[in-house]
Image 1 (cartoon, rainbow, N blue to C red):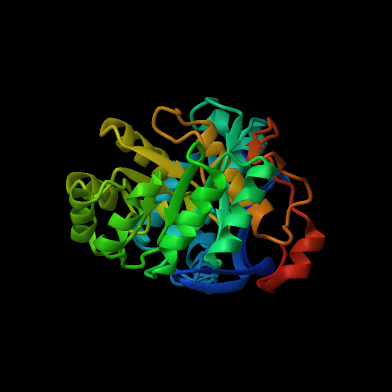
Image 2: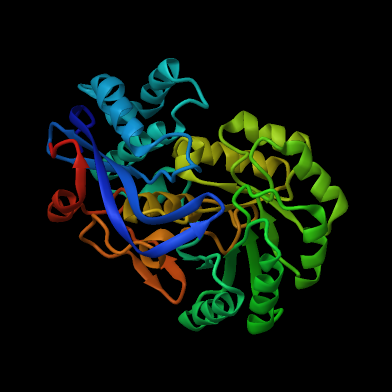
Length: 375
């Protein structure tokens, strides 16, 4: 290993891929997905890759903005830098864009740096960021805002495929009660059921009506800035609250904890600004005895692998057993990596391949490229 190897090429590419179908949440309906891939090449030929998959009305940045910021401001900072100086590199980026600015942008770059380091030292990412707690990672089976009878059928199909828990999307609608009731009736009470409102304002009287269905939690049942209402829900209902969109940087997590607005928190490598930030936030959760779940429902292979390595290197005493990495096999119709993630019966398995363990497909990159050029 030559530790004097430096980065000599950097590029952010804009991609657009079709989904397996049309998916509806409280943030809207989507049938295709935009993604940003960062490619870093060292002067010894080693290539590191990073990726983020921003969601309209959920993410704070668009894919186009992320590409622009990386190619215009960040790539010039990386040229001739050693990827092993990852902390100082990210510190320089933060001087230009302090948190919580451009968290998704910073995540894409940092993932690529970590992947490059792993490939240079020929070690998997989990060994670099904490070591192995678990190799197998179960994830939830995702059910959208379908009519109640269809939602129940899809939930049963997910269990038959091997998923160990179900997550259903809801909004502020009377149909939500029937959807949850039908799913619970179909899967029974021995299967974990989670509900996600995606910032829809859920009235307390509606929440009281679904208490009987014993949800693991309800996720973000209010707009991200309505922290006081989340506190009120915790006081007036028995359903545990999982907070997602209200948490961006470390300070927002501390604010949620200090205000006692959450029973659980949802963390994502993209949303939190990278691997270093999310690991710090997991440690904060551990210090305050709050469990978290990790995962992005619309991620692709590279971004999913980043989250899987974070989960694999994090203690189950803080990070849930069943997490929410959901894109590659559940929603995406294709990917830009040529190797297949190991996935069976609702469970991912982490490999010992160097870095993230992802191999880019140049053919797929060219097929789905919407902006930028291959280096």
